[in-house]
Amino acid sequence: MLSLEFPGSFGRPLPGQFLMIRIKGSIDPLLGRPFSVYSYEKKGERVHIEVLYKVVGVGTRHLSQVRRGAVLEAYGPFGKTFEIMEHVEKIVLIAGGIGVAPVTYLASHNHDTIPQEFRSEVICYFGVTSAKRLIGIEKLKNYCTELHISSDDGSVGYHGSVIQLFESDKERFESEKTILCVCGPRIMLQKLSNLEGIEKFRCYVFMEERMACGRGACLGCAVMVRDITGEVAFRRVCTDGPVFDLREIVWDYRI
Amino acid sequence: MTVTIGGLTLKNPVMTASGTFGYGEEYASSVDINRLGAVVVKGISLKPRKGNPPHRIMETPSGMLNAIGLENPGVDVFLRDKLSFFTQFDVPLIVNIFGDTIEEYAKIADILSSEKRINGLEVNISCPNVKEGGWAFGIDPERSYRVTRAVREATELPVIVKLSPNVTDITVIAESVEKAGADAISLINTVLGMSVDIEKRTPHLGNIVGGLSGPAIKPIALRMVWEVVNKVSIPVIGIGGITSPSDALEFLITGAKAVQVGTANFINPRATVEIIEGIEDYLVTHGIHDVNDIIRTLNVRSTV
Image 1 (tube, rainbow over the protein chains, first blue to last red):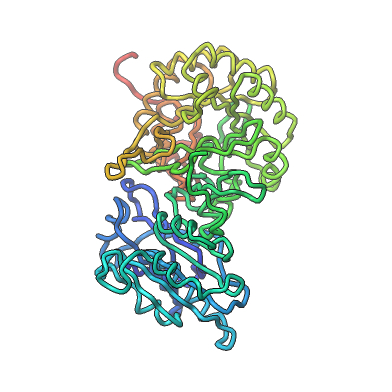
Image 2 (cartoon, one colour):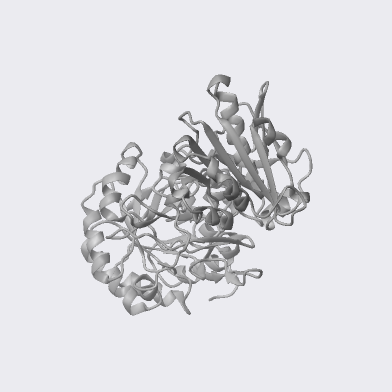
């Protein structure tokens, strides 16, 4: 968890948005890394933002070694905002691993902005590789009507992948009355897209891709989609996303 | 801080590098575009190009690889949707162009020349991500000559030719494009490179190979600028790993008339403006009134 303090003028991120964070003056690692917003709070004249991340490479490793009080550079909020604008009976959130961060922020935003009497039921499925990877449930469960856990090794909750867990339960959801919001490893998202009947649901996925500029200029963070004409095209995760309709995404690049 | 390049007057020697500044809008909230010496927008081709499949970028020590694949909306959409953004600024606008054939280069040069807002063309003969066309031109002095000549004949606008470092002797290409009528030369484009994922045992880039940019290539770029300024008479614009005012000054002292800032924009959107101010500070502290008085003032003890 990285807790950052900003001047009060820093824009309030909305769900879907992310920050580019780097160590000031660093040449190696050079680029900022994109991180979804996990939580936001305005405390007097300062803004507090939390970011939840996993060490996956050089950039995240360096960040994990930064000490309290260090000054970092953060740009943003970037990304197209994503809010659930219509009232639905049920919101289903599916999170895999570190995907719990943007999903939690979406849930908290929904909870804070919608009056009690109009709130949907929020059913969360959260999958981890094992019990020791279980982070973030204390915050997430505040916003869920139900929270179901799965683990690949069976050390906590359902034994299996979070998509298998969702699949075993999905018959109770009516597609017209449900919206799905999903974030996790690419393999997980691809498995979800292959589930029978999933195309009937409104399903939104938080995508990620390596980024350089984070603001739409370099075209590095391309994701392959099928556009409305059925043609294959590329979209920028940082500007056209990070949230996309699951049905748009093309998973196999060999075209 | 004024410099002139091929008939273009720049208020300072700092430009943006093609492919790193989009079409201007993405950085407008961070930088006062009117302060820049010139803006070079992302390369345009006749027809739209989709670009390469993911992954398109990968960071490497002190740099990054890119294999974007020259994704662009094509000249028609550029003129219709992107050009108008610049009417509110009075910064010189240079459009980077490329094609698959010499005819395409000439055609796009011709189309862009009738747009009043466009002040110059930068000819990309060196992009390492194209499988045909661009890749072939830049490594061959004869084809570099023919492309430059075709663009020269198709336009009255200042023509800057951007060279590839992925050649045995860049000065041969430089002399060739000068002979063909280029008004200036910009160098370097990215250096071919590669990176591998040892767990997946796959290349990190979808295209396998990409172009390296950033601080890691600065010594290569600087050396090539040095070699080229000693061989041609037309102005040379230095590109490659410039992130700070002192980086830019290294290039100016070595002989570049101007510099382009590229990858630095990704890590600091205000890099261009900070570099301009840093050069100004240097001139003040050294009692120099005109930036042209430091250009090509490198002291070398032995003759080259």
